[in-house]
Image (cartoon, rainbow, N blue to C red; front, side, top):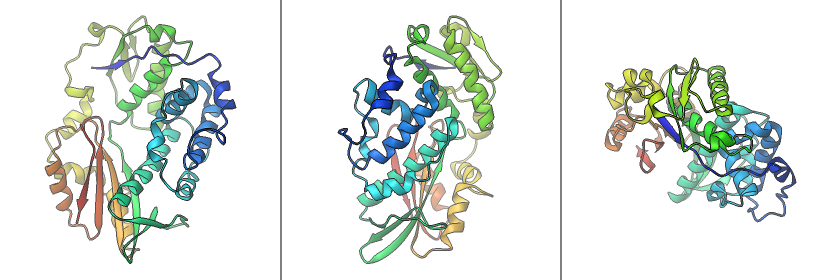
Length: 328
C-alpha cells in the first residue's frame, strides 16, 4: 500500500491558451533551454489535458501558468549545440513513450554535466549514425562516451504518482483536489507500454470519481486507508519485485538486469570494441532497491572486470542522495 499526497493548486481554465501564447523567444529562459521548451510546448499542445501527467510537461506548465521556478533550469549552462543535437532525437512520441524518451535524453545531459566536472570538455556535438553520444577531450586525449539509462523494473510506480498529481492540477478534478491523499495498491505489475496505459486508464476512472474505492485489474485506489490496507514491504513495491530480488546478492542482481541480449551493460561492452578511449556512462534508477549499499554496488560493478572506464550514476526514490561510481 502506498499514498500520494495531493496538491491544492489548480491551473487556470485557459491554461492551454497560456501555453500556446507563451513567447519562448522573448522569455527570460536562457538560449540553451529554448530548443527544449519548443519540444515540450509542442507535446503539450498535441496532448492537451493529458500533458499534465508528464513530469517534464508539468514542470513547464507550472512555470508558465503558475509563475513557478522551472525545475529544469539546472541545464541552462549546457552548450546550445549539444541541446539541439540531443533533442533532435525527440520526434512525435506521445504519452508514456514521450516521457521515457525524455528521461533517456536528460540522462545524456546529466552525463555531460558530470563529465565536465571531472575535467572533460565537449569538442564535437554532431552525432552521425553509429557515433557515441558524447565526443570529449581531456588534456590532449579524445574520448568517446556512450550513455545508457536503466530504469527500475518497478519504475511505473513512480508513474502512478506523476499521473495522479498531474490530474489534480486540472480544474475539472476538484473532487480529487479536495482529498488530502490517495492510497493505492498495485494488483498486477504491467509488463508493456500497453499494460501501463491500461493501468493509467484505471487510475483516470478513479480520479474522475474518487469518492469510492476503485478496484481495477491492475490497481486499487481509495481516499480511505482502511480500503487499501495490505501487508507489503516498505515503499509499496509490488510482490513480484520483492520475491524476485530481495534474497539476491547485489552482484547477481546487477548481472541479471544489466547483462544479456539487448541489455544496457552488454550494449556498452559491444560498443566499446569499436572506439579507442571509450567511456560508458550508465544512469541507474533503483527507487525500490533501497537496501542496496553503495559499497556493495561498487564491488558488484568492479567484479565485472570491464575493459573500459564506466561511470554509474545512481539515483531514485530509494536513494537519499544520488551519487556517481567510477569503475576502472
